[in-house]
Length: 170
Image (cartoon, rainbow, N blue to C red):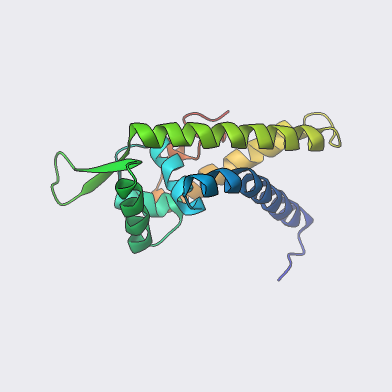
């Protein structure tokens, strides 16, 4: 069902375009490495939050717990991540990015940055000055709000990298 709010429709269009751009940049690289998009997302979140619990991985990746466990199993079996028992609660398992996983994240990030940079440069030529910063700020606030609603207040530093509101964002 389409929204009657033009601002909401515009945000959805921007998010859809961003998803298409990221998919176009990521798919050839991840496919060549034998990594699914879901595995890439988990690698990316582990790069920002190594030592995450499986519950945190599931919440941040937007997948059910059993799916997060299967993704982590594949990453561990491929040597891209490793598990360790929580130091204070032996019932909990923490997932960490391995050195090989960090290298893969770097390769994929470089390709995504290049592809998105080219795309943003093309679109920015068509936009009024300052629009890109306003859009990035809006996306950062939306992300921060979504992360806080999923993981609770005080988790803005866990927003995806490169997004305002994250520990590494603008």
